[in-house]
Length: 295
Image (cartoon, rainbow, N blue to C red; front, top):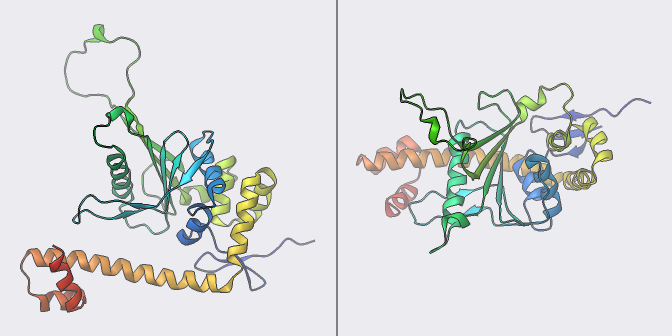
C-alpha cells in the first residue's frame, strides 16, 4: 500500500488530493490558537517542558500585550505569555520572516517584562525569572545548534591586570543572574537535520507540519497527539485558510505602514512640511496630523 501523498503551497498549507490537511502551527495565528489562548494550558505546558527541559506543575496563560509606562514607550506584543506555577514568566514569539532584528526584539521583550514585574517597595531578589523564547524560520545567530540558549554571563577579562587568585573562594561565578534566559529555536537549521530525535524535535515537526514525522510522534506523546488533532480540526475549515492568506497580506501592509510612520516621525523632527511627508510616505494628511498630535 502506497503512503499518503501530500503537497504544500507557498503558505505552507498541506493538501491531500486537493483537500486541506493542515495549516502549519508556525503560522503565528494558528500558533496562538493552539498554545496562547485560555483552555490551551496543557498544550503550552507540553511544549514548554520540551524546550526548557523542566517539569512544569501548572501555568496560567496571560495577556500577551506588554504594558507601557508612558505614551511614548513602544508597545510590545508577544504571541504567547504565561506564568508558571513557580512564578517564572515565559514568552514565545513565533517569527517566520527575517526582519533582521530578532536579537534586539527579544531583548526588548525580556527587559520590558523584567522591569514591569517588580512592584513598589519590593526587593530586587523577589523579581520573577523571565524566559523569552523565539521560534524563528531563518538563521540569525552564527551558532551551530538549532536550539540556542543564552544567559547574562561573565566573560574572561582581557585587561593586563594581576590576577589576585588568593581572594577567590570556591568556583568562580558563571552568571550575573539566572533570572534572565533566552531560547532561540532555529527552524531553518532544524530542517537541515537528517533525523532529529527527542521530544523537542517531535514538537517542532508538528509545528512545521511534517506529516510522516508527526505520525510517529503522536505514538510517543499524548500531548502532541492532542495538539495534532486540534491543528487538523482548525485547518479543515476552508475559511481559515483564506483568512490566513488575507492576514498575510494585511500583515505585510501593516508592516510597511509602520515603517512609513517611522520615516514620517523623523521628517517631522526635521521640520519637513506635511505635503512633502505625504508624497514620500504615502500616508494620508490625517495620519500625519495624528502623528504630530501624539508627539
